[in-house]
Length: 134
Image 1 (cartoon, rainbow, N blue to C red):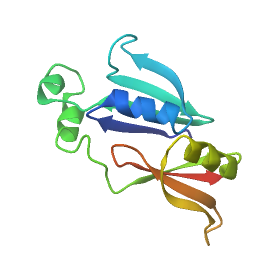
Image 2 (image 1 turned 30 degrees about the vertical axis):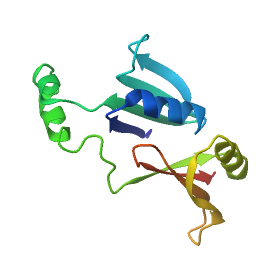
Image 3 (image 1 turned 135 degrees about the horizontal axis):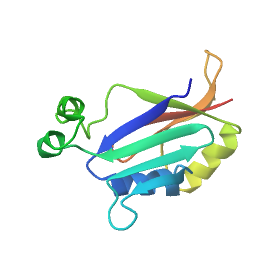
Image 4 (image 1 turned 135 degrees about the vertical axis):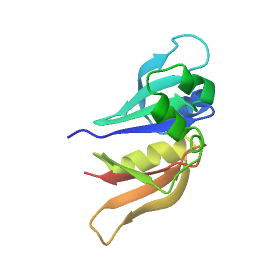
């Protein structure tokens, strides 16, 4: 089973730039192609991340997923009590790459007692991502 992460943000362009330039993700899809992005799909190895513009009540009323968007409107753009774990082949090299790019590293690389070698970063919206060795 593949799991995809979907963040809502008030500034898709800012998060898109951060995940590509700082966290080493690759852009797989962007909408629209020109101008400020309102939706994108990013990839890092097997991990996939979607970022969408915070929905408004007006947007929700004009789409077939109105119920979903209405549930998200009050919560969108606020980091939740969730952390995303992404496995990478060489966690130490990934840490060095992200540190050099200016990532907000809030947990250094360490060997956790549950068996993962990991480190954690915060993105500009406050979302927590932990990278671990696979």
